[in-house]
Length: 205
Image 1: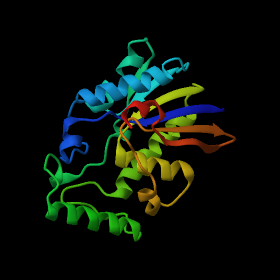
Image 2: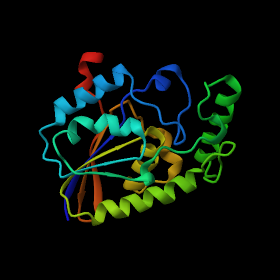
Image 3: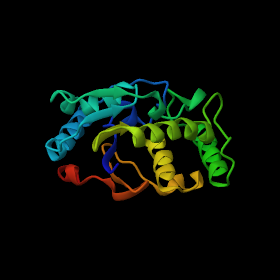
């Protein structure tokens, strides 16, 4: 079945602004700018005939899609599209030692070691397994137009999987707050129409 899938990242949180690591274990709300970004996205895409809204289980995605939910669109939550777990780094400001550990982990992923992880964190390989489950679910859903709200690292992984690319390519993809990836599913293939589109935020530029 052909379908159109709008995938976007949640709006800004105060921890985003402060450079504090969030991940799946920190359930921060949007700040004022994040709510403004969510509203700007809604003003641009609120007339799209979405048949369902799919989010992670984290508050920042729930608040980002709230304007759509207020229209009465059915909503479902999926832990499969939660942000990666950054383990012991979560809730901490990015200091030079933490940043070095993060960069080393990303370098390991880029080198093909997808089992690398931060202390007590989730590996890229583990994240990919749950995201593959979500993709399989997406394909089987009956709706033709879906809105999906997720998180930065999870979206980088998701995009690679949808494109059939190795996860070593994750760093190629960017994820502004409320940046949109528009994907069309046709003949069992995913076609990317827009990538990290922030046209709705033109006022912020």
